[in-house]
Image (tube, rainbow, N blue to C red; front, side):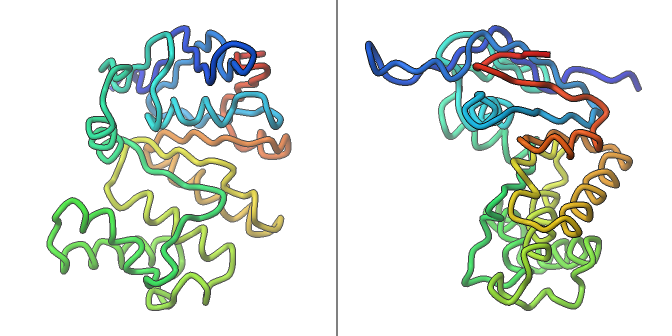
Length: 225
C-alpha cells in the first residue's frame, strides 16, 4: 500500500490578540505528515512548536490557512466535530502524563473506550492487554501516585493506543523523565512505529532527534528546515 498524507497544514497562521497585543504564533506554516512516518518537530521555547502541535493534533483550528486530516479539511470544524475525529484518528501522550489520580492504571487506560460506550468488560480487557504490552501487567491496580514517572508515561502510552488510532502525537513525552526512562519511552514509540503507527513527537531536546526518520525544525512560527 502506498503511503498517503495523513496530516497536512497549508499556509497555517495562528494569531492571538489584536493591535499592540497581537501575537503571530504560527506564520504560514506548511507541513505534510505521511502515513508511516516517524517525525520529530524540534524547536526552542517560543518557537511555535506547541501551537503547531495543537494544529497537528486537531486541538485547535487556524486563524488563516487550511488543515487537513486524512484528506478531510477540518479547518472550520466545531469542537464536537474536532473531538470526534481526534478520537478516531489520534492518540495523545503528554509531558505531564494527564492521568486521573483517583483512577487505577487500568481505569485510566479504559476511560476513552468507556466514553465511547464500549461495554465495560470489553474496555477493561483491552486496557489490560495494553498495560501488559507496555510492561505494566502487574501494576494495573495501582493509582498514578503509586507509580514512578516512567510507569505513568507508559500508562499514558497505553491509553493513547486504546482506540487503535493510526497516529500517535507525543508532546515532550520525556520531559519529566530521567535519561533511562526517556530512552525506554522513545524505544517504545519506535516499536509502535515498526508496527505501523505514524509517530509525531514535539520536543526541544536535540538529543531526541536521533530517534526520528525526519526532523522538522520550527523557529518564529514557521519551518526553518
